[in-house]
Length: 258
Image (cartoon, rainbow, N blue to C red; front, side, top):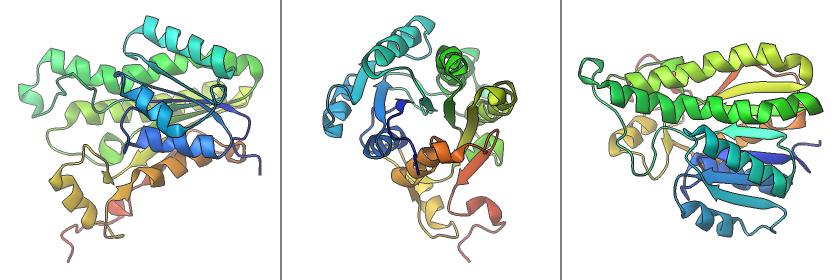
């Protein structure tokens, strides 16, 4: 199995030590890929140090991926250091340090809140994908993995309309792009995490995780392993799909633990 060995990967939203992005980056590196990571804060340099990789194996840079110029700067620097991107994991989104994350009922949401939620979850995905796609097409190879969610794509939560819209939008974009890019050796897929325990998990979310069929919330590494598979050479005939990682939560109607 070739997996991802020798490939150059970019993982966005990897600033949190216990988040999905950093777990995915670590797994890619351990599997033999070169890995570039980014976040909106200098914490990303702490994550780079924790990876313990050689300078030609890992790279980190602070960037606001809602800004096209910063996306271009990050991708250019990453590819100069590690080589052209073969793998892109669009994990950035949901929260952004220093920003007011929108929430609440749609009827009370401001336009600014809506725009911000779409920007950090969906626009970042668009801008990063657009930045690496021409090179992938030219080289005839690529793996794009979008970190969507079961929320919006398969289920809904009151008060999460902008998040749901953005994550469902990622799945729609994935399906269209899979058709556009399939003839160029590029696969495009989504992951749909359910209740995953990270540093940003609320107590209510952890309780919900304990009511899944598996009986616990998932871990960032469990989502990362799914991303690693979809980023591998072996996943060459899977495209336009969403791999759900939710402990079976969406298959059950009663979620009371009864």
